[in-house]
Length: 338
Image (cartoon, rainbow, N blue to C red):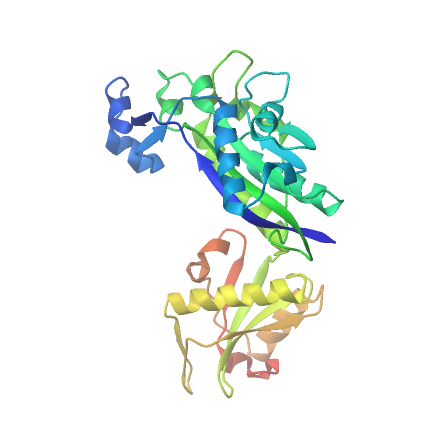
C-alpha cells in the first residue's frame, strides 16, 4: 500500500495585523485578559481565501521543487470559500496552473486534518502528487463587536505537497470523528457571523482529542502497571494486556515515550535492595481478558500488602485516559521477572 511523504510546505498571511491593544481600544478587554486566556497577542486579517491559498500553494511548490504541472490533485480545506460555486480550489488551480482534479473540503477547524486523510486515500488508490491547502478568511464571518469571537480569529493559509511513497510514509495512522448532535456549540449561518459556546467547545475538544489520538495510535489502555524490576541491568516492566498496545512498533514507541517521561521527571524508586533510577522500560504482555485475574493473583501472593498508588503525573499526556500504578517489586517478586 502506498503512503504519503511531505516534500514541500508554505504559508501565507495578510499584511494587516490586529493586536490585542487594537481590540482593547474598541472592546471591553485588555492585552492581559486575551493573552492569559488564549496565548494570542496578534492576528493577521484581510484578503480572500483564494489569495491566501494561492500564495501558500506557490510557496509549497517552490520548496518541494515541483512544477505546478506535476500536481494531479488540489484539495482545499476551507470554511470560507470565495463563492458557493465554483469551488475555490478551482480558482487556486487556475492561478497556479495545476492539472487534474480540484475540490473544496469543509470540516471547519478540523479541515486540514480531514484533508490530509482524504489526500492520503487518493494517493493510496493511485493519485500522484497532491497539493493540500488549508485556508480561511474568518475575519469575514466574524462580528468584531463580539469579544468572545473577535479575540480568537484571524486569516491565513498553509499548504503542503504530498508525494506517493512505498509503505506507510509520513501518515502512520489516523482517526476521524464528528458528533452532529453538538453542532449548536459552534455555528455560522449563511450571511451570518460565527457564534460559539467557547467553554463547552474547549471542554469537549480536550477530551475527544485525547481519545482520538489514543484510537489512532491503537492505545486502548484502561489500566497498566509499571513494575520496578531489578536485574542486570535493572529496568521497569510495563505490564499490559496483549491487545492493548496494538502492534509491536506502537508498543515500542509507547515504551520509549514512557521512558522519556520517567527520565524527564528524574524518577527514583528505592526498594530494600537498591535504587532504580533512569532505567529503560520493557514491555510485558498479559494474555487478553486476564487483567483482572492477574491483579488478583499478584495481590494474593503479596498477602494483600501491595501498596498501589496513582501517579498520573508521570505520564501527563495519558493522565485522563489511564490508571497508573507503581508496584513494589519486592512484594511481587514472584511475577517472574523481578
